[in-house]
Length: 384
Image 1 (cartoon, rainbow, N blue to C red):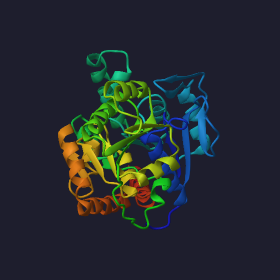
Image 2: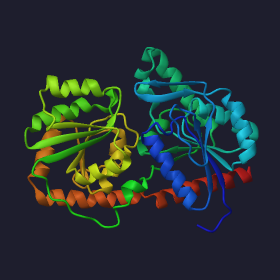
Image 3: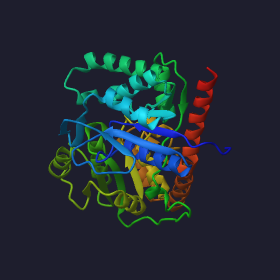
């Protein structure tokens, strides 16, 4: 890419630290990459309880702060007016929204008034998370889908992090330009990638899950899996979430598993998670509502293959027999894991190909792709 003038870019997000998750990881990775390329990037988000100061992170005033299902929440006050003042001060070339609601909606309104191009990353199939709203899905699903489609059509560019999301958007009347761009690996997971290091199978096969402890992640499936595999395996569950107590009860009281067989690791640091990926033999995953599944890539960066239920986000990443396996049900997953642990040559091949897969998701590569999308959009805007 030819040398260009530095752009001023503003990321607008409802989710940021102390909240953790795929959206936050994606934002942090892209912001780091764009800054390394010489561009000025700001993050605009909500002022949650226990927020900490970060340079070039603007937190809008929120009079209402609370926790809901173990996640920090906040409601802003006159967000559109605050954003208009901020954008007039920062003079961004691009505003990149990461949610269609709350701050995302306010940003869109403000940008249209100030004639600033808006990019939107559609991170989530929002209709898959309606159980968080205490209203029947029959009422909320059509309303939510209509709002999301309307938001997409009001943006100048929509980014889909996977083919699954692009296909999902294609099923609705989304007329805006849609491009596929996955999220990059955070440096903490990519730092050990330059050299591939082969693992030998542990005496007790170590299976790992990383993510939130919520119903839609289908973690009870993994507990059933470890029960079926027996004493030659152990499962480590790293994350946090409102569903942890129910999962612990199911594991230890219903299935009668021991803490040697199943271990919950609550709110581990990123460095600890990177260590867990390195130590695991296989990463196991049972969610069917993922749009990208960055934890799969993080695992592969450590040379740890993935065995997962089939799902929209997984299908773009996991190639059966190459860097892991996609399965249909519990019995298939159990059989595949046992086969891998009885075949050292297969285990070694899966490790190497998993590592190769992750190399395509580095910050430097994908940040250049994102910047190229911005530049094309700005050229298009200049011609109109």
